[in-house]
Length: 120
Image (tube, rainbow, N blue to C red; front, side, top):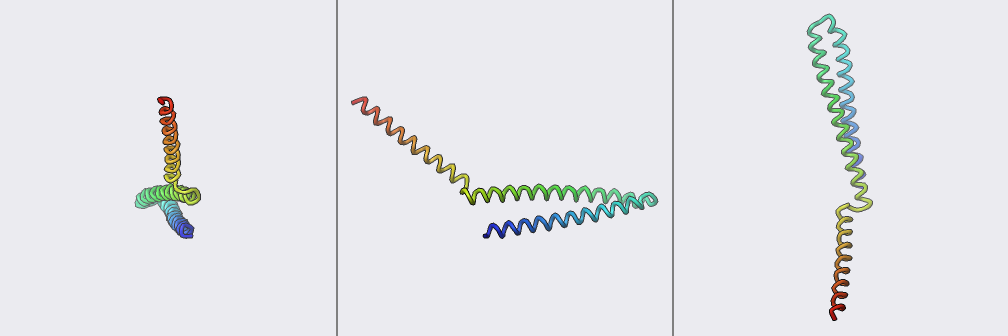
């Protein structure tokens, strides 16, 4: 239940960030279009167009960064879910190693007994 609540909180946080960045991106596009319209007659507007284009590029980078972060969170969530249902991978590997070590020990003991019988 706690992981469900954490997951819900992470999804909500990611959605809010995405909406905020998307809103800012739309605002920048609108400002850029308005600046381009007035740039034909006003040289100061040309500078504003360049500024807005830089801000828009930065906003797009943030959107891509948030998308990558969201995908990393989703992968971490999938991994946690796998571990929750199957147990941590390390514990499984340790159990396999322990079983193999027991088999090896048993095989060595059997071999030593066989060698001792041959010598007698």
